Image (cartoon, rainbow, N blue to C red; front, side):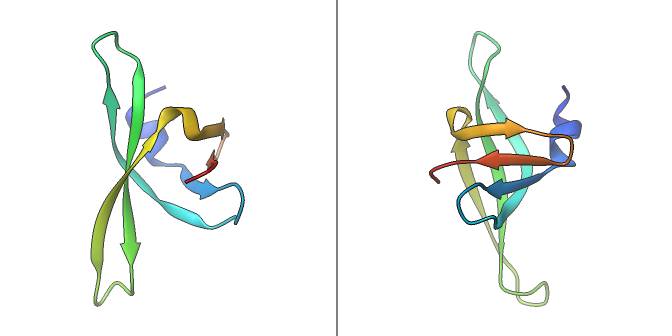
Amino acid sequence: MRLSDLQDKDVVDLKSGVKIGNIIDIKINYDGNVTSLVLEKKKYSRLFSNNDEIEISFDKIVKIGEDVILIKDI
């Protein structure tokens, strides 16, 4: 799976069902394994946006589906 494939998916909190943000990058260790996802979390409206990045450990991923990535315990 490519990064561009992951960026097309919504990242959703499994417990609340709320969209967390969009994937903008991934972190990979020296062995080539994905260690975490970097998300752009949007606050407020687009007019007055304040963008923060959040990093979610790969072990928090419950399921990568066709359209969505489910995250637990964020």
